[in-house]
Image (cartoon, rainbow, N blue to C red; front, top):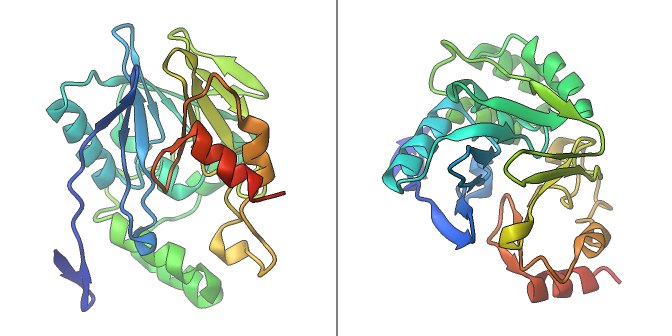
Length: 249
């Protein structure tokens, strides 16, 4: 446990856990205030696929260490499930990867890349719009140094669907959380990685009426998918995902 600004923060030990087939997951911080998404690796001797980059270069370095500790191969591809900072800000710490993302996310990340990110800029933005406070304070805690930091748009884009050479399929689903929300399917392992696709909009844009889009979950259900993995919660079995989808009826 460490103390920052007078508050205690639990230090999470990064470790990859085998889920099914070729899929390994490294959970994020369960504390919602940290805004730290989990990541997944599809391990393949032809080149592994990392799903999401980590929330910061420091987080990405911890993920890289966890990969090495688990004996997993480094990624050749990095897939963004969407453009939000806690999924992409670690990308600059992943050298020699091809970054795959939806075209809508590419446009948004080019705009993000042009912003003068720093602790001073974060404070100025929160003063201008206090609703940004939780997100921007989490960013300030996540990034210990801005030296070498960069927001990286995808280097390979798609519009509807794309299949990588190792049999990993990416598919655009959109939704209220982010216009570029993408799911990642690993058919031979029976796994669907959801990112944040069914979550309501980010907190600073959310209204009291916004709810998780469980109807979207229902549309993604399939008998040949045995695990559904969202970025900020434990994996769901098919039966659990069906039960969650039924709650939207």
